[in-house]
Amino acid sequence: MKTPYLLLPLLICMALFAAGCAEEIPSDQAGTSSQGGGTTESDGTAGTVMDSSHVIEVTPYPTETTPTLGPSARPAPEQPPQQEYPVVLHEELKKPSFSKAWNVDVPHPPMIIEAEVTPEIESRKVLVTHGTKETWETVTRPSDTSRLTITVRDENGNIVEEDGFGGLYSTVREKELMVLGPGNYLLEMHGTYVDVDLTVRVGKLEESV
Image (cartoon, rainbow, N blue to C red; front, side, top):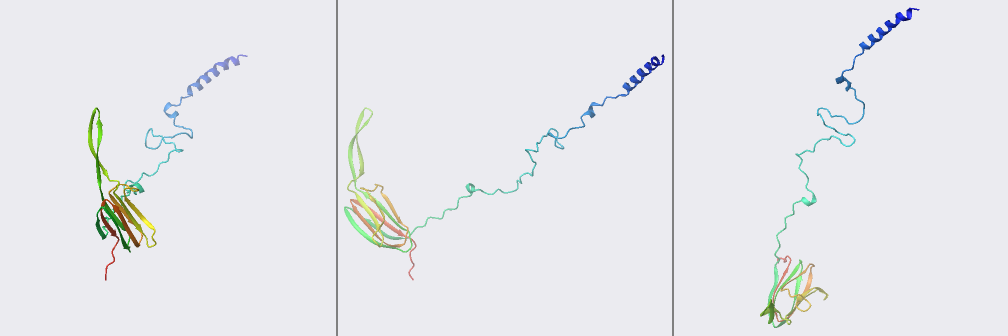
């Protein structure tokens, strides 16, 4: 019956010996094992984070490449010099009245009709108020009797262009009409109390052989 009491101290010594053999794993080796998944550090640069689900590393854009100009960046084409068409008719028409017509052959359009109008000028005095002061001033305007009509007809008598001065037309003194098609045209001018400096130009004149 004394045997259990003799074994008890032996068991206690064996338990203490086993506890002394256990070693703690060093802290600098505990983190060497990592689980898969999640964000990883890129090689060579500490602190760099790249989420591959949103970011992909690609080749940088070559700076040596000259960019192609877009439509809005294209240089404007050079404007050709304005061509001076030859004069086929020039005449000064004087008041008080006139009614004239010309047959103009236009084998090479355009036909450009330029008319510089000088109307009669009326003047009158009007009373003008400046604050509490009233003064008489002279104002001028084209006479209501100054009228001009310019009409261009084709070979069938149809009106292809028409303009004028006063009445149904504006009082702009420089008139320009343009006919873009070839053909034989009748140019008519009817005026009262206006002077007109008329110039007619056409396209290329045919050279005589």
